[in-house]
Amino acid sequence: MKNLVVFKSASDEVCQDEIVQKYRDNGISATLITPLVFTFKNLSEWGAILRADKGDVEGIIFTSPRSVEASLEALQDENVHPSWHSAHNYCVGPTTGSLASIKLQLKCQGEESGNAEALSDQILKDMTKLGKTKGTFLFPCGNLKLGILERRLQECGFTVKPIEIYETTCNSKLEEEIRKKFPENAEFLIFYSPSCFAFSLPVFRKLGVELLKYKFLAIGPSTKKAIEEEGIEVFRTCEKPTFDYVLEAMS
Figure: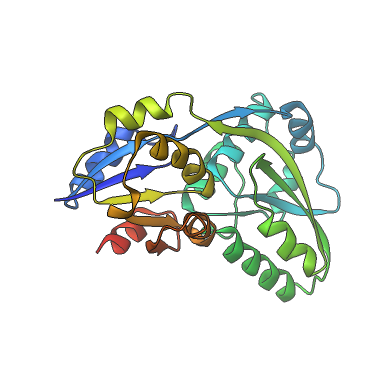
């Protein structure tokens, strides 16, 4: 059985035991470690926007499940304004898309995109089909956004307005988690974001972990870049943050 250590934020939607069992069913012993914690912010401002008519805004771009969860809390048991249902809303990944549909009743395009680069390409392609060369998108995000999506769309004439609605910080118990849970027979390490890797690296170094003995997997090109900038070779990169892509990367 292959041994995998998964570094990703905790999910409120999927029990960790279910994730571990899903890997086990596919011949993989998985250990989940949580490098990140989140705090919501600016929810009053964001909730007011969601409850109001969208005006001339093209749509909303959700790039993480956390942005949807923060939006739900911002609404305070109210609904989004009906005008947002006909907007050109987008998301990265099926988890984010499913949450937006269930929690906010917003249908988003781009679920199949696995990262900001791929989503920006789809948005531009869709806008071209609609004959649009400019427009404004709202981007609810965290404090550690990389700016990739904004730059790409702005270079092509569109305006992206980021609104920080959550703060990403290091899990204060990360060192304790790694000490207690990191298996001696670990073979693969997978990181779901650049920040997952950035917060974990100092702990590895403090504990004297021999990183070069492991096979590093990265979710998306930004995470791959963050790992390689520290002189660590990435074994495989997953185009999308889905279970099937992880299995394929480990094969």
